[in-house]
Image (cartoon, rainbow, N blue to C red; front, top):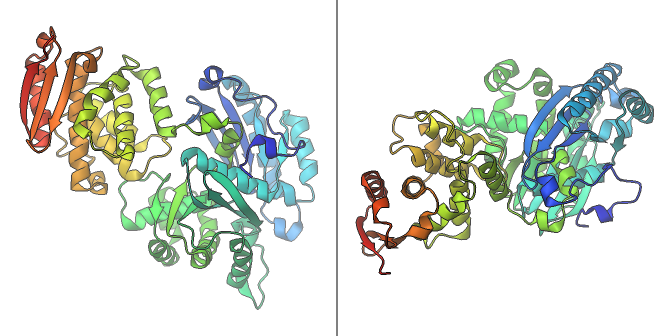
Length: 515
C-alpha cells in the first residue's frame, strides 16, 4: 500500500474538507492537527509552503492519559481532566488563528481503554472536536508518511514510540510497506508485572514479533517520538555535539549503546538540568532506553536517524497529490521564504544561474544546496547590517527545514554568512564548523563570496549582463561582460570579485563580449 487516501476504508476520514484543493490556495493555508497520545496532547498549526510547511503554532500538554492503563484498563482520571482542558483551549485557539476545523487523531490510550469511547463522546460534546481513533498499524503508516514528508525517498524502517505503544513500518521506494504495532510504550511498560521472564525478556519477545515483519538489517532506522528525541538529545550532550537540532541527527549503534550506558550511570536530575528535558519525559527514558537497546540489537540497522516529523506531518502527507509529494521540501521551503521575505523575489534563480559555472562539475546533491542558498541569500535584509551574517547562519542551521543533513545545514550557514561578511574568524559559530571537512568549508566560502559579488553586481539579473567562466586547470576566473555593462564593474564590484577569486585560489580576468 502506498498510503494514499484512496486506500483507506470509507469509515476512516479525519479530514472534513480537502486540504489541497489547489496549489495557490494551499500555499498559504493554515492547517491545524491535534494528536491525542497516551502521554501528551499536542496542537500543531502548519502554515506556508505546502511541501514543507512551517510550524505556525505548536503546543504540547503532558496529560498522561495512558498512565495506569495496564493495571486499570481505563484512562487516567487526572489525565482526562487535563486532556479535556487542553482540547477546549486548542479549539478556541484554532478559531482565533483561522485553523478551524481541526483534524484530531487519537492513538493507543484511547483505542485500548474501556472508557475510550465514552471519553471520545465527551470530547466531541464539550469541545466540538471529532477525534478519530486509529489502530496501531494505521498509526505506523501515518508516522512513516511523516518521515517521507521530511525525507523524500527515505529507505529503511520507521520506529514510532508513544506512551502506550510502539510501531514499526517499512519504507521502500518512497512507499509504506509492512507495518506492525506493539505494547512497548514506556507508560505501559511501567505497569508490566515482574515475573521470571523479567522486563527485558518481555521487551525482547515483543520486539522479535515486530522485527519478523521488517527487512533484515535495514540501511537506516528512523526514530519518531518524544522519548527517542530525549535519548538523542542526551547522546548529543555526552558527545559535546555542537548543533542541538534533533531532526536528521545521526547515531551509530555503538554510540547509542554507549549513551544508554552513560544515561544509566548518571543522575537523571543533573542530565535533565543540562539538556532541558522535562521531568515527565525523563522519567520514561529508562524504559524507552531498554526498548531501544533491544531493538537495535535485534534489528541491526546500519544507521540510526532522528525524525522530528511523525504522525501529525503524516496527516498532511496523506492529502498531498503525487505531484506535490515529488517536490523537494528544502527547495520548496526556500522558495516560499524568498517570496515572503526577499527584496526581489525571483532573484535567487538568476543568482543561481550566475554563480553555477564556478561549481560546474558539482553533483546534483551539491547543486541543490547551492540553489537553496541562492534562494535564501536576501531573506535577512531587514536585520541590522552588523548582524545579517549571524541571522543568515542561524536561519540555515536552526530553521525547520526538511531534507537537510546537519553538515548541509552548516554548509549553507557558512555560505550565507559569507554572503554578508568576508571573514568568519572569532565568531560564535566556530564549534559548528567542525561538522564540515576542509574542502566543504572552502566550497561554502566560495559560494558565499560568489553570491556576495553577484547580488551587488546587478540588482536585477546578473546572469543577463555578465557571465562567470572558471578554468580550473589554468587557475583563472573570468568575468565576461555584455556590451554596455562595463559601468557595473565598479570599485566595490572589483573588490568583491577579487575576494571571490582569492577564496578560490585563482587569478582574475575581465573582458567585454563582442556585440
